[in-house]
Length: 137
Image (cartoon, rainbow, N blue to C red):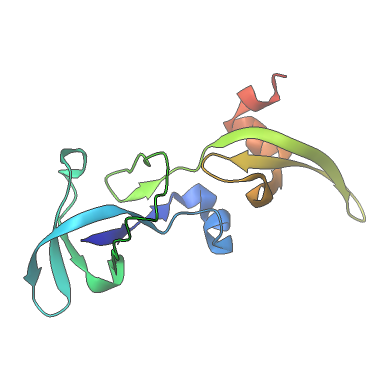
């Protein structure tokens, strides 16, 4: 059994570079067979049937099973190119950053599947454009 490496969508690349918000690997998959020296064929679920099922070892991480370690999580909705979208839950805080000639409105966003300490400061106009429902209350 191995975990498969996934990446966030392009618009959240800044979050991905931080490294703390994006899950790197998802659920354990069964190895069907070895293909060459550095590739493995995995048993993918029907939802990922359009994804090629042979992966390089750099995309995989060994699953070391420990029955006492139980992690609860919401399953990610993976796209066909093995990317996913981070979704915000709510706005935790707001502030205005002053530069020499302008002011920038920022909001602190709490992301789904993350704790409050992992909330990030984002530009208010960008978040409002993509998620106006967060500003209703």
